[in-house]
Image 1 (cartoon, rainbow, N blue to C red):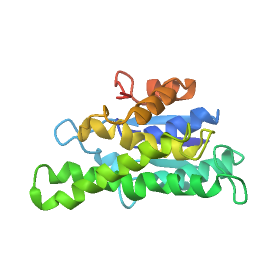
Image 2: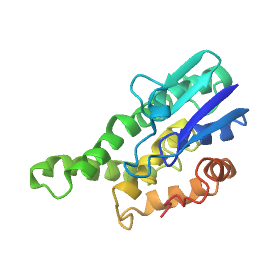
Image 3: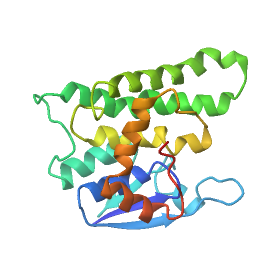
Image 4: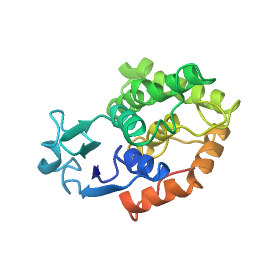
Length: 207
């Protein structure tokens, strides 16, 4: 059985949510952050060489990195559900948005968090603005990032649009289509179950 090693209020929310969407059996093992540093405890950091969240174990397999875990679960345990295979309509859109989340959006948000008001980081600040603008433009045309159907591209993208804003505050007033998208996601029963299990008491900022 898959064991999701979940660090509280972290990107491993994605993996709990994925398992709920696919209705897969899994065990949730929660780890609390260090109360002083807010970092992962030592017991979590030793799970993988890089020591970051998320991590799953599946038998003898230990696997980190959100995108790798999502692809592994979808194709090994999920029968390919929530992915768009090569040759199908929307495949290129799915592939792009699936990798945009951690390839462009998350690094831009992290830079924004570290840079603060330092004017030397002006060009880097602009990257996050462009990322939000691009997502807004996409969601003005379609209901979900890969098209009209919900996919894993939405699962991997939600964290930087929601929980990441706890660490890097951002006003979503200029982004009506992103706000509507987050409301659609927030009404998904599997998302609600995942958040209740992974981070009880934490309110995911969906507006």
